[in-house]
Image 1: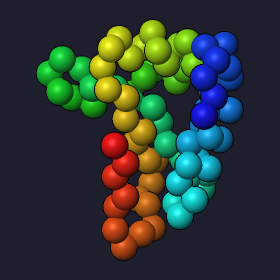
Image 2: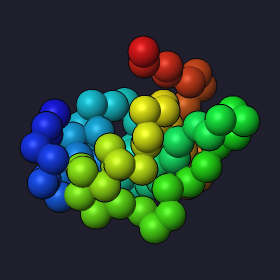
Image 3: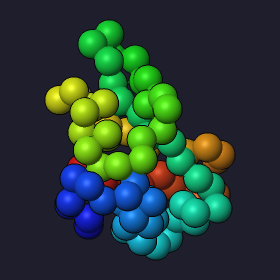
Image 4: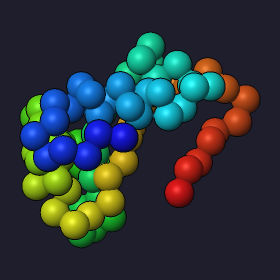
Length: 80
């Protein structure tokens, strides 16, 4: 995975897509979200352009990748 804070977010998204070879993530698309203090899912807006932007927007909270469409699988894969 890309770890440089100045890396372009498209490189990170490509790494994420390659991490899930059985899911067509590039076709489905996803948005980067975070959990707020009330445990609600909040989309990072505007979508970040750099890794540093993601880190600043997360504010020590969990990040979630929310698919833009349904994932065409029989089962959902959860990675921790």
